[in-house]
Length: 100
Image 1 (cartoon, rainbow, N blue to C red):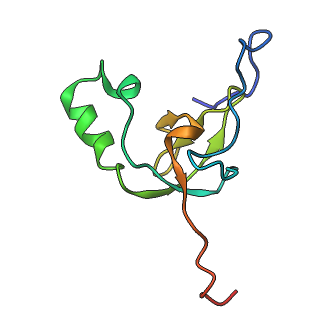
Image 2: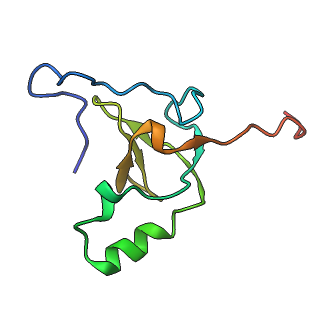
Image 3: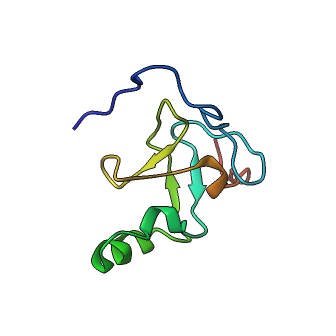
C-alpha cells in the first residue's frame, strides 16, 4: 500500500512532530539512526511473534525510509514496516575518518 503525505484535514495540535532525535539532532529521510528500545505504545497490543520480530531492530542502526505528514519516522528493510517518534531514536554519528 503506498503511503500518502496527505491528511484528512488540519493536523492535531502538536503535529507534525519536530524532526529531531532524543538529543536534539536533526533527522531527515535517509538519516541513519539507532533505535535504543521499542516504545510500549508500539508493541503493547501485538502478538508475541510480531513483538519478537520488531525487537530485533532494538540497538540497530537503520536508515529512516520516510517521514510522514505527522512527523513519524518509518523503518523497514525494503519498505515501511513500523514507525517511531523522532524523540525515540538517536542519530548515528557520521564517521569522519572514512574517505569521502
